[in-house]
Image (tube, rainbow, N blue to C red; front, side, top):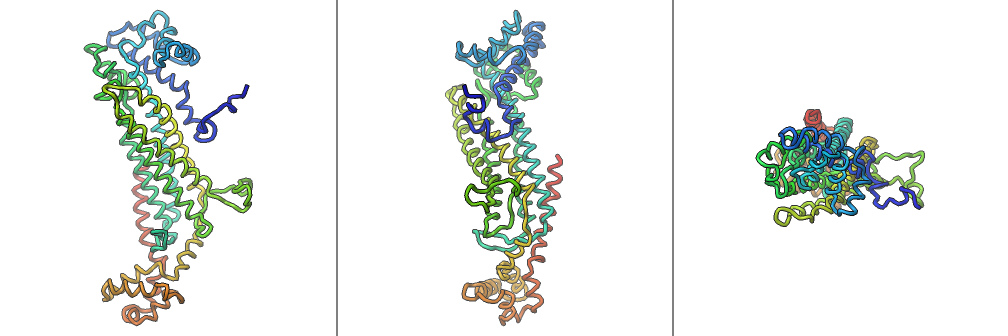
Length: 455
């Protein structure tokens, strides 16, 4: 017989994700959450005089994995072919004579959707921590390189200089916005129901609203204000689409690292264990951006998981089961992989090697061409029409004008000499002075991020 490790089927079980996060979605953890909901129901019903207090106490005492085993639930489900009925039967057995009150007035979705809300609330807290850690890592890196000149690139071509710190600060702000989105979403996500078969609460009688409020209070949730038999699936679709947004940001940042680590650019590189790590089975010299590539691959899968929850919003009348099976697959995978890629991306930026001299050399390689905007604006200020100045510099930087650095060509041009001294031309084409604006803006961004991330 193969051992457990040899029989694992899904790569999520042995290759991707952290053990602590995978544990949230273990069968034992999910059973335990369902039992917590059943116990909260019984205790709230006793509080309102709907079931005997001693019965509720017995149910509460039995509602844990010490008394209700996964093996017993599985055995019952094989016969009943209904997962929640198997849980309630097993709990009723464990509660003895008081078991007759288990699940009183409830429907299956009251338990499963409320347990799911507990699961999603716990997951959201972990993802919030991931986003916070990544944002703070980016803030620290941006602060270090607030004034490190780097050529900006648009359309894959040299633009004007920025600072590497500003590039990273932009990323930190984007990650922080995702944290804000998650904070705004959690109150809509951590929502359960205890409202019976079609959501009206009729099975609980006149005190249905009080009961639902009491159950959710015990569990640290709020109640869906207008459920059908299930909690509105727009809530879950919003969550998985937020995960897709987070994944897109992660891929954007990973792609930036991958591009800047190209041999031809080599301005940054992700951490690499020189003593032991292997980049290629054939090409021994390789130092591949493997973690960033892994983040990219996982991000594409997380985005794909956003589609089924959108389709799950379409239910037949008050409910159907078309959402149930895919949610069992989509949510654990999307959450575990989002946590995985965020922690990996934090690892990349925490240990990122930044080659500032290479960045400076790349700007210098343009021969001053990356600074044409500064020169154009100065000429316009001195009296040339902006369009005239633009055409002048376009001509000076055209392929036909290649040769000496732009500074020499500009100083030799009569129209430039008429408006700017050689010293002014040199100053205008100095990237270290031009990039100061990026450094100042970086400081402003980081100060605001410090304030927001302290919350």
